[in-house]
Amino acid sequence: MGREFLGLFDEWAESYDKSVAGVDPQYKAVFENYDEILHQVSMGSFGNVLEFGVGTGNLTGKLLASGYDVTGVEPSKVMREKALAKFPELSLYEGDFLEYPQNDFSVHTIVSTYAFHHLTDVEKERALTQYTQFHPSMRKIVFADTMFETDQHKLNMIKQAEKQGFSDLAEDLQREYYTTIPEMQRIFTSAGFHVTFEQMNDFVWLITAVRRSDSAITN
Ligand SMILES: C[S@@+](CC[C@H](N)C(=O)[O-])C[C@H]1O[C@@H](n2cnc3c(N)ncnc32)[C@H](O)[C@@H]1O
Image (cartoon, rainbow, N blue to C red; front, side, top):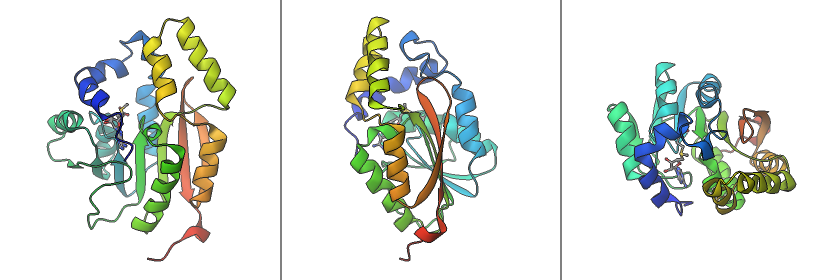
């Protein structure tokens, strides 16, 4: 689910690593501090890690280098090919945030960068609730994604992108499901997490969510 943007990623896969390096002026600010953002997500992880929206495998590389056991899930075939070209041994599955193979592996941390906004806010909440049911050993979620402090701030950023002539960015911000910090806080809290946010650049925030002990679900 939330796969309505998949065609874009099959097309983007070839040039994606150039975009994250800041070559595309429209997305330079979005990928500002990219390496540090991935590093922070990796540093916040522990144990066996389940990664959603692996893309070309840049976060995966940091997780593997830190010695975590990583399982990846990625809906785009071309992105999966790119990631596997870098890490041929990676356990990488076709799937998305909501539907993925339920293998018999225990997960301690769930991570994702630049991808959770592909779900609507209703789907985001459903995904988090599912994770607490499917992965009883999961204690932590560490995500990084574009979010806005308020709806007005989001509108201002769209206007600013239009003024700068960044039409792709302006369209992207309106088309996909970028939410606000208060809404994201509500979503994580209602799914049973204590959540904190740290701003990493003008667009991206680091989300660190720890499962509350009173939220344990027996299944
Ligand atoms: C902007 S890229 C981010 C890639 C990588 N995580 C990174 O930080 O560079 C977004 C990725 O999310 C994937 N994606 C799109 N919809 C998704 C969904 N519903 N569930 C999981 N991943 C999705 C895309 O195919 C793409 O690989």
